[in-house]
Image (cartoon, rainbow, N blue to C red; front, side, top):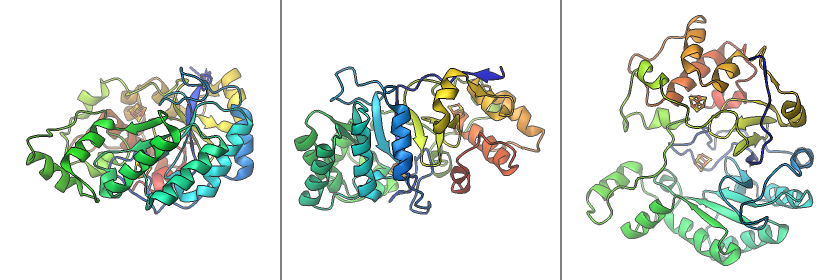
Length: 342
Ligand code: SF4
Ligand code: SF4
């Protein structure tokens, strides 16, 4: 397999920058306030949307509706950190008729009803179709829950049914628990243990990125042999929910630090394929063969953690982090992902 075609992207997220107000323990991309503010430029936004025009599919309910794995979302990091750029990006996306656009936020900016309504109305008037509001115990360590509630309430006024709460079960649970301010993960666990009315919430949780470091004491660890026989969470190559970042990378939505190529070359990558000749790491990842990647890395001196790993993605990242240090593999991008992962 020396060349493989990039599936034509039909949905995805635009990472305006990786900078964030929070440093959530589960963040797939190690986002934090420490990242440099390397935002998408306006010229890059125009180039990006001109390339993506007529590729992105609308939600099944139409161009003016939203759904998680359709259309295009504005993401980060935290996109509201650069509100003017977000606004501009929404306008340019509208000029190129990108359907089903929505913004993803942690609600740090929702300090008053007036500001929240004004910012959301401006984005709606610029062409934004909806919003995804993040709710779980990791965000709650940074964002007062009353701000999240404000964002949800006012978003429903502005975007009606085009408001997605990710994850709704946590939102319901936090309301039941009467949480208003921020709460540490440890206090949250104590609260649910002492509250027989709520119980635990069973929701999707990906053990990738920072989760594998900061949640190490919360989950069991397994030996490499057990994990590497598991399938990947999602295929690396697919046409839905890819991410396009401010450093020019196309990335599989759930695998941070893996570049499929530059979005500037998207048409060539779709028509002619990704050249894997000089991208051995990407070749192993695409075939989900992390066992072979492990043996490949051993030849460079990689040694696995004798304490075991939380997930297949945990060992995959450990290997890639090691290989990144050799500076031999262009597919391990953006560089900042690895530099900020320590
Ligand atoms: S999960 Fe979202 S809010 Fe949390 S650090 Fe990552 S980008 Fe920021
Ligand atoms: S094991 Fe690696 S390639 Fe597979 S889903 Fe996890 S991070 Fe992606």
